[in-house]
Length: 215
Image (cartoon, rainbow, N blue to C red):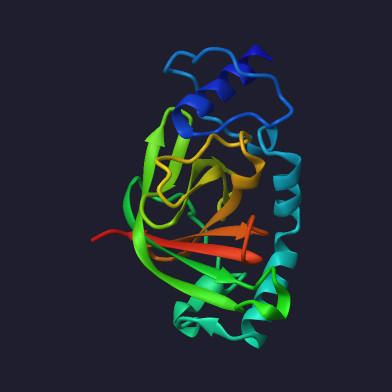
C-alpha cells in the first residue's frame, strides 16, 4: 500500500497527475528512483473510466455528425487521423519536440454546432520522467498535459489536465474534474501519432490531437 501511495505522489510532483478526487492527500515526494507508474486504472476517476469505456460510441457519433453537418477546415485531408481503426503496433513515441494539431469531431450542441473543426499546427513535447513519458501541448488556447501509461502494443493511456488561454500550466489530474483529460495514444503512421480524447469536457464529442516530429 505504501509503495502505491509513494508512486502516486511522484506523479503529482513530476508529471502533473494526482490521485482520484476521492483519495486522501498524498505523502511528501518520494526518492527519485521510484519506478515507472504502469497501472492507469488505479488513478483514473470514475468519470474518466466511463469516458474510456464509451470511446467507441464517441467515435460513432462524432463521425456521423462530421459527415452530416457543416464544419471548418479540410477534414478529408487528415486521412488516417479520423479512421477509428488506424492504430499500428509499436505505439511508444520517442522523446522530443513535435508539431501537433487538434481536430474536433461532432458537436455537443447537436445539429446547431459545427460537425468538425480542423485547427492549425502548434508545438507539443514528449518528455521522459521518472514516472514515465509525459505529453504536453505547449502553445494554443487549449493545452492538455499529462502522464502516459503503457496499455498494450497499439495503445497507451494519457491521464492529464487542460490549461486554457493564458494559464501558465495545467492543474494536476483529479484536482479540477472539469479540466481532467483521458486520452488513448496511438501510432497511425511511420512517424505519426494521435491522442484520441473521447467525450471531451466541452464543444465536441471526440477530440483528436495529431503529433509528428518537429523539423
